[in-house]
Length: 134
Image 1: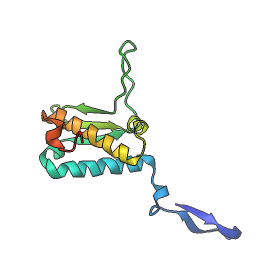
Image 2: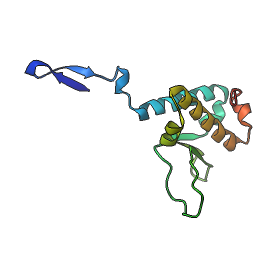
Image 3: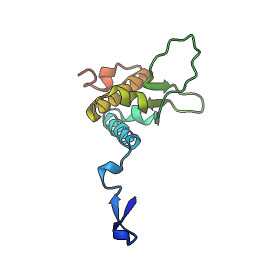
Image 4: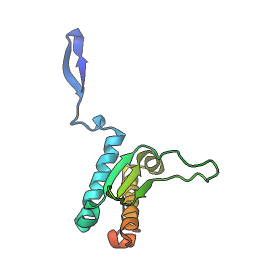
């Protein structure tokens, strides 16, 4: 929280705080959008959503060889291994750069989550989310 020093009398009251919208960072807003979409998808497919771990990274890792054509990745699905549950990683910066506003970002997050869940389960995206290509 940031406090104002009014008239040289020391710090008195906050200029803005956690209860105001300007306090939220773009990463915090993105995380809350991902959580909202996971909650929404969990209502229809609780077993499917509970079985997967979802994380958010800022940018995808740069470990491709130089001869591979560069492709922008918005998310990545890691299948289950012996000791690890399946994981979905959403990349915040590429998704934010593709969206025009918060509504568009929400739709992009929903699409990426549905695509990764369909890849994990073998179901069609329309089976997981009936509004997928709406």
